[in-house]
Image (cartoon, rainbow, N blue to C red; front, top):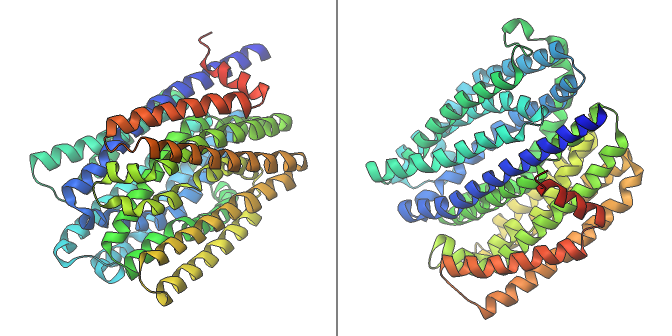
Length: 513
């Protein structure tokens, strides 16, 4: 019986990987086209407004992402232990809280949008368009929150294949609607908001269909399942995860806001475009990283702590190695990527791109470890450390922007400090604290950090030298050269960096039988 369960788990993991790969291809295709398309048709100044809308969404997500993170933990444990009534209460309570948050924030958001030019630096001729964009983008975000609550049921059941179909629909339709609206009418940032809104409605409908398909009649949706006791349990974790989210904003997102205030929409637009590229890289890397989260939660809920340790240590290295190779390629070819991706003149900002992506290997690796302390519901210490680092970064960024000369050197210093504090957060906060839960993981975590750092430096150097010999400026030639470097790097890392059991695990994912 146990063998059958293990075989089913491996088959589902392989299926998850296949659909993760399809999601990867969709993200790469859209990522290579979408942002350059917007910059080319809107101009960098108008495009620079889009990241500003996301800043408001990120502050709202401090509440909602904290809630969904807590829901993931409690719902997953309930499902794996066969407690359907408890799972129904978790889901309905989360939906109720999302509705309450929506109602509470309606009035504050109205005043923010009405006075958006007092908060951000926005050109006068784009002000009315910007307000409409804010309305539809924030509305889209709320709809996506409802989808995300239902999609947690897919995550808890390890149905990442279905979850990735939702992601593919979301990224493809968003791009498709923008193209149709731009060519059918005109180039206007309002249509980006319309496209987001239409996409999220379709994604919600499909998410509801998948929820009914996978949960059947076991999980009920009704107001009577809103439970105050469950809410109290979830809020205990939600508050601390919320603090982590606030710290993350202070570490990773505040730079764009400050640069918009102290510089202009142009600089925040360039930085926003590079941040978007980093987001696409993170989404692409989730091909590997996302398949391990459910496995860790399932192992924890079944009290298989040796499995939790083994999965976390092995898969964090695998994810970190893949991330180091991808980011090393971007760093080495950063000048050509900046030019090809955004256009002539943007290659002078290549150091911004490097500093926006260099943290990704460490962040994705730490993300694997974070599943451990969330599974244990021990988020208080990481929350305080992350918030403290976020506040330190915010203070330093504002001081630099206010007192240094307003040139691009100051922006480089801002980004470099954020990167340094981000590495500290990943391995001092998350790595150290996880080793307090499982002391046996202390040495493997430190070892993985050294390996990933050295590999990132090596691949970056290899890619840079290659870019100097082949300074191509066309997308096709750059993809060919970059692809060759990537293949060589992957083969080398597979043979000389990964342990035998890790190589066997990876190969097993691709076996057809």
